[in-house]
Length: 399
Image (tube, rainbow, N blue to C red; front, side, top):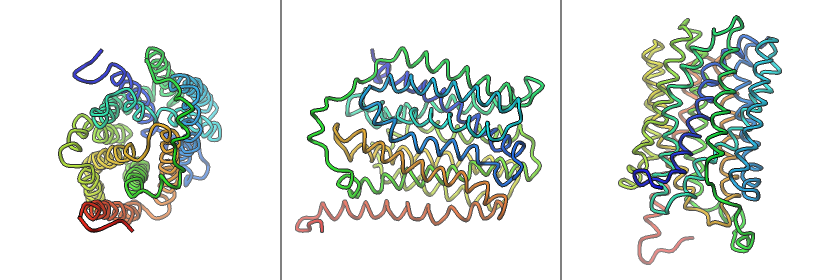
């Protein structure tokens, strides 16, 4: 079955992405504030969210290798069980006002996300090669729904019960249940033929490819720097005495900026080249920083985080697209695992650092600290274009 040239599985994967990201955006909206209320040391306010990314980092390698052996579907079902456990842990943590138990819950949410991050790679496996770029984009476009579901659900469910935020994590359980039903109806790839292992290069051989280096830098820097600014924003808004409803509004538009362009990012990559799209993403993120440094009204936060989302979209989809050009079928699992492990290692440290930087040095230094990393990514893209042009020149060979 085809839907406007895209397989039914890609549509279901987009829905899976939407439901997973709805939970994540709810957590992004509320976790730092919940952490601030539960933690004795307020500098640890972003620790729960950082632990979520930490668990995602640790899960990325075993999740890829497990699904390579037992299949994608069984892996996603297993992660659903972990997600349900996280929901229950969060509910108990809120009821008992336990910061430690809330941190455990976010760890379990991170494990779920560690598996779910492979939705975008599965899209290329269920699509024809000529549709790979757009398949990745369409799956990430599922996050558009998350832009509306997550922040609004956090805001509406926050005071549903006498205990604040209890309703939010009941909603998380429901979202995970809906995603499990969706996954059970998918027809996903079976484990690969082990005989293909003979055709796999070593990780070192894969990692030294210039395309791999730029792909990794684009995804890691784009995601981690986005995470740092996004995680610190609710705390900065709280410092400016803006209400929680404003925080939810800003996060909603940020997530919309992250995923709405996915409907056409793949087409832009096909037309202008992946390097140009990644470079544009870096410039958009620099624009976000400029706005943040200019003022701290609601509209500064709103416009800056919307631009941050756009920049992330171009850098992350561009990086993912580049990555799929660096491995064959036998190398798929370990290359994807290495990429996501490094990406979410940087995201983890950025998320944890957000709280420390915001609490100790302030909003201005949070933004300034991002600039050198974005410049590194922009320089790497220019280096790749130069490297590719050099290889194409007659009479010049690679050193």
